[in-house]
Amino acid sequence: MSTIQICVMGVSGSGKSTVGAELASRLGRSFADGDDFHSDANRAKMASGQPLTDTDRWPWLETIGAYLRDEMVAGRPTVVACSALKREYRDRIRAAGASVYFVFLTGNEELLLERMRARAGHFMKADMLASQLAILEPLARDEFGVTVNVAGDIPQIVTEALADFAATEVPGIA
Image 1 (cartoon, helix red, strand yellow):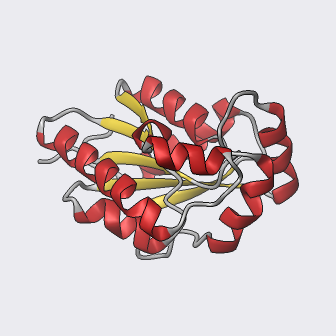
Image 2: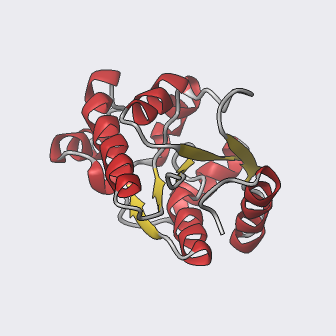
């Protein structure tokens, strides 16, 4: 049986990296931050306040999909944080061949902006949140995953996501 990989998704400021790292810790999995898979050109573009285009994103998403597939094939359960804002982005990740469970972190714009403004040294600027919200496509009913509101604290958010994993009896998640 293959290992189900987990992708924590959502717009910037939703807590993907923090929630993803905590999920990985609680599940005894490795964790990778999708931001680490961006090219230098993508990072520079976002740091200058320019949103990425789909053309910018395709190689990044394909790299994340290949990483999840390779980890799955090697039997290494993994959690990755990746915005995966559109269904076609999630489809691009899945197309690499990994079985991926998506944890969609959602929250109101005011809370997300507050979180983005509070963090230091991140290349994604708070004024770019609107461009992400404009293209965001929440998980569809036929997509494998759960939607979790980020209004609570990290332990509460992770506990809610883990409860859904248990309720869906996802193979490979202990």
